Image 1 (cartoon, one colour):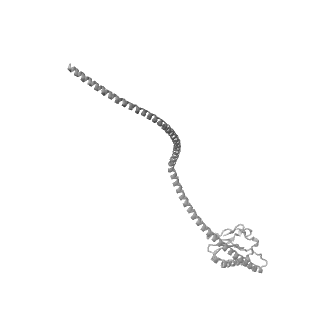
Image 2 (cartoon, rainbow, N blue to C red; image 1 turned 90 degrees about the vertical axis):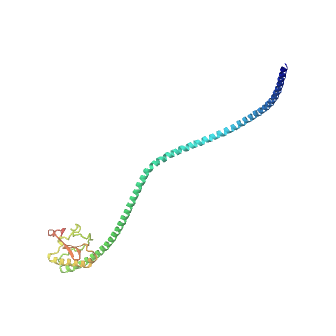
Image 3 (spheres, rainbow, N blue to C red; image 1 turned 120 degrees about the horizontal axis):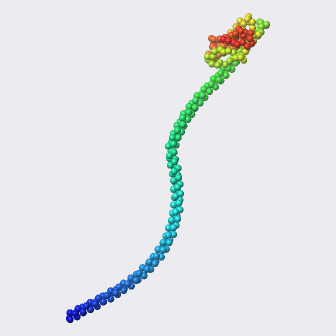
Amino acid sequence: MRTLDEQRCIHEAEIERLSRSNQIQCANLDSKLAEAEKVLEELIRDKKNLEATLSKDTNEKVAELSKEISSLNTALEIKSTEIKTLRHSNAKLQLKVEEIPLKDIEISKLKHRVRELKILVDQKTNTEKVLTSKFEELQRSARNQAVISESMLKENDLLRYKIEEMESSTSEGEPNSVKTDSAIKYRSPQSVNICPTRLCQSEQRPTSSTIPLRSSQSRGDVMTRSVISLYLEQGRNRFSKGNIDTIYTPEGTFIAKDRSCSQRLSFDDAHDADDEGTPRL
């Protein structure tokens, strides 16, 4: 019995201890619960404040982001346009790059053509210089020939005057004879090796009615030889041997190539009675 009482006492004491401990723990838990409720209320307020702040910030950020998006879209459109333009330009440049070899070939051909034209221009220039010098030389030669022709005309006039004097002195002894037309004509030399040619149709010989008698032909021959010797003495020293001088007389045509040579053109006997007889060698 004593043991049961002791155990009951011990058990009741233990129950009281546990009850006090439980009360203490409940009080602690109540205080903690109150503190937790306060913290919860504070957290709820903070949550609401944060939600309001976040909502406000989010709206502002959304507006800003919308503006940025619109501006970026505009920039994107501009960049797209630029990209299209650059692609188009790139395509053109690619075509031009493909044409570069052909252009290089054309450039080389044109350079070669330019060189050929420069050579041709140089040749033309040299030819022009040569022709200019020849032209000047020909002008000088023409002036010299003009001077020579003028001198020959003067000598021709002098010889004509002397021949007329000789004819007048000859005709004084023979009043019944007919005077002959013995005018000397000058023809400019053609070339160095020119041979005597036929008379031109415009240079008609005297008519047969004006030919003197056989008795006066010897006297005409002497006069002709005198005229030739006088012409050679006065004029031939000024000219080269290539100059050909033709002298027309009633008895024929004399061609003197130099001082020691003279050739006579005689008329055909069959044409002595003809007014326009043709001379022959």
